[in-house]
Image 1 (cartoon, one colour):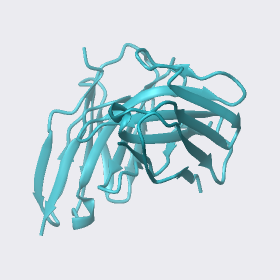
Image 2 (image 1 turned 180 degrees about the vertical axis):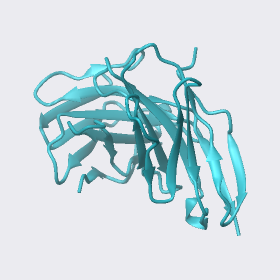
Image 3 (image 1 turned 135 degrees about the horizontal axis):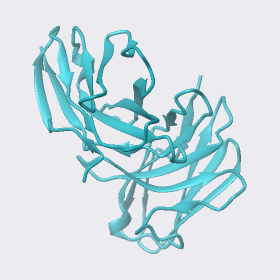
Length: 116
Length: 115
C-alpha cells in the first residue's frame, strides 16, 4: 500500500514551453502533498505544500507564478512549470502524507525535467 | 544553525559488514519525529524507519535499526549485514510537532557497499 505515482518520469522540452507533472496517490487519500526539487548530489528542497481544495503554500524564494500547483482532489496534485528555462532543469519529486502515527510521507518516483 | 546534520558525505563498507550512518538534530519542540530514507540511483525515495520523540524503544525494521539517543540529539541509522543493494544515498529527516507534516532534511550520506 501507500503507492505514489508521478507522470511523466522524464521530460525534455524547449525553452519557453510549459510542462505539467502529475502526482497521484494510488491507494490512499492524501490530505497533504509536497513538491520537492533536487539538484544533483544534493538534498531535497521543499518547494511547496498543498492541501486538497486550497491554495498551495510556497517556500520562500519559490516563484508561485512559475511553479503552479493544483491539488484538485485527495489523490491528485499537479505541478506546472510555466515558461520553462534551462535553469529549471532538475529532478522534481512529489510526496503524499497520510494521517497515520508517523505522518510519514510517501514519495513518488520523481520526474527528471530537462529544458533545452 | 542546521537542524539536521549528516557529517558523512560518503562511506565505503565491505559487504556483510554492519554500517552506521550518523544523524544529529536540533529542535526545541518536545514532540518530533525522525525519519530515514534511502534514495537509490533511480531517484525514488524509499522510507526506511521512523522514531518518535516519545518512543521508549529504538525503532527496528528488519536489517535497519535506529540508535536514538535523545539527550545527545542523535538518531543514527544502523544497517546490519550490508548488501550490495544497500548502495544508495541515505537521508535523515525530522518533522517537528508544530509543522504541517513538513520534513527537514539532512544533506545525505552516499553509501557504497564493496563486494
